[in-house]
Length: 429
Image 1 (cartoon, rainbow, N blue to C red):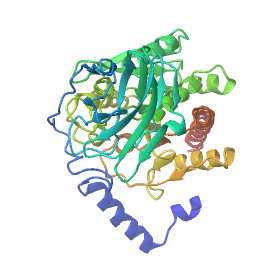
Image 2: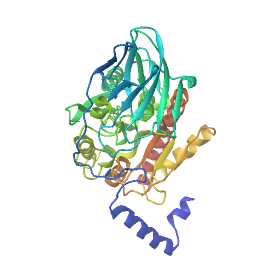
Image 3: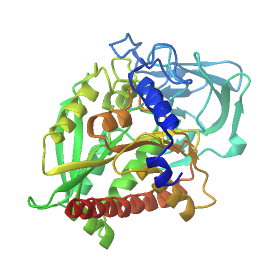
Image 4: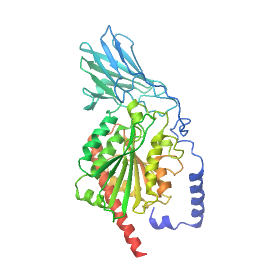
C-alpha cells in the first residue's frame, strides 16, 4: 500500500475505517482464539504451589529433583522395568499450552532408562534441552526423543549415572542469570539499573536505561519489554542479543545512543520464572492481558515508570518491542490502516529483514489495538508504533543471534532516519 493511497482513500473507505477503528478500540476484548476462557480476567487467581522435593525409586537407585529455581516437576514414579514417568502440572487452569518442565535426574549406578513426560490438560510442546551443569545446554539427540502427538506425551531415552543430568523444556534463564548478565553490562557505563517496583513475591522489577544523550538534545525513546511469559526463552535470548547490539561499539550504535535512550524491562515476570510457571505470575495471571486493568504489581510498576514520559518535553517515545516466543518466527504488528508514529515503521523493518534473510521464515499477523497487551498500551499511551516479536521455540541458536543482531541494526538505522525526518519536518513548518 502506497503512502499516497493510505493518506487519501475514497470517502466510503474513510467512513468504513472510522467505523472499524471505533469498534476495534472500544469493544470489550474477550481473548484471542488461542486464549483459554478467562484469560483477560486479571484479578488474582488461586494457584497450586509446586512441592519442592527429591523423589527416588530406591530399589533402582533412580532419583529426580525440582529443588532449584525455574524447576517444574510434580510427580515421578516407575511404570515398568525400564519405563519411568514424570507428571507435569501447571500453576493453575485454564492455561495456554506452554507446558514448561525442568528437573534434575541421576542414578546410583550407570544405567539407561526411558522417561515419559506427561501433562495434565496439555500436550507436549518443547523439545528437551539437556545439561550436565545447568549452564551449558544442547538439544536432545533425535534418536533419544519420541514425541507422541496423539497422546500428547514424549518419551526420552536417558543414560544416567551419579552425575546430575538436567532436563528442561528450554535452556534455564533464571533471575540470577539476568542479574549476572545485567551486572556484566553495567561495567560499560552505558546502562543505568533501577528497580521500578516489586512483584507479588517481592522480587525487583528491573529497568535498564541505555544511552548517554546530553540534556540539550531531545531524546527519542525505544521501549523494550520481555519475559512476561516464563517459558519463552528464545524471546528472552533475542531481547538480550538485541540490547547488547544497541550497546555495542559500532559506529551505528554510538550514533544511535547520542540520539536515543532505551528503556528496557527484560524480566517482567520474575516470580513466574523462579517458580517454573507455564505462563502466569505468582497470582496466576497472564501479565500480557493486564495492560488495561493493571491489576498486577508487575504491569503497574512498568506502566507507572513509563508514564513519566508523558509530560517529559525532552523525550519522545518512538517505538516499542515486546519479545516473546511461540512455535514460529512471527511479528504481530498493529494493523497498517491505523495511524502510528513513526508511520509504517514495523512494516519497513519486516521488509528490510526479509530482504536481508530471504530464506529465513518470518510470518506476519497484524492485529487491531483492542486487546489489553503491551504493544497496544504503548500505542494508546504515546501514539507510537509497537510490535510483539515472537521467536521460534526451536530456533537454531546461531541463526537466532545473527538475525537478531541484524534486526537491532535495522531498527537503529530506521529510528535515526525517523528522528532526522521529524526534525526536518519541524524546521519546514
